[in-house]
Picture 1 (cartoon, rainbow, N blue to C red):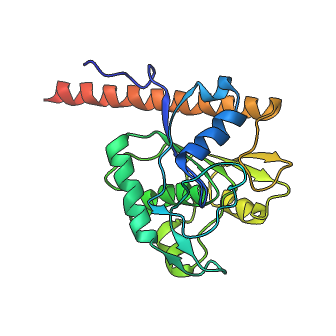
Picture 2 (spheres, rainbow, N blue to C red):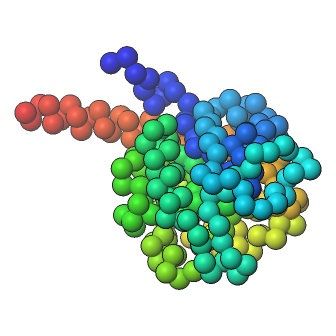
Length: 236
């Protein structure tokens, strides 16, 4: 009765930071580079990863510690350590701090954000939380170990998605492959490398249009749910 409807509240977004950074660093990166006309439309939550960094952070010269990891991996990305614990940690975050409408991730956080949507479709995890309605992925990639990928990725991910691809990003090719996993992905390209990118005039328009589309979809779903409830009440 007293709660906000979908039309009255902002879309709530779980933001997953990059390897050996933190939620606070992700917050500073995003809010410092994205204009208020975009960020004011969304309700962000910036948690820290579950594990303290086990090595040097690439952002030490830019941001102070502490730094965190979501999981560890070997040099050829064929072995992932503590990944199952990480998945359980994120699902617990979503239960305690949600519900979340979408996920936004950078680098390791982007890999995980896309994995959440895939595992929900496959039914292998995140069954205790509402279905994610959209993802925003920056410098993303897929898990490549076959036994891991089999549990995560369906043939196609139908969740609406935005993919930021940097021309100078060492993960550009992997990010393009990830985007092909999604149905009708929205692609935003930028000239920078492995970083949370700034939004320019065109990318601002693209993001605002995407947010409009998700809000309309959420509003329609809410109306459909109310109609179904009324019909059930009438039958009863």
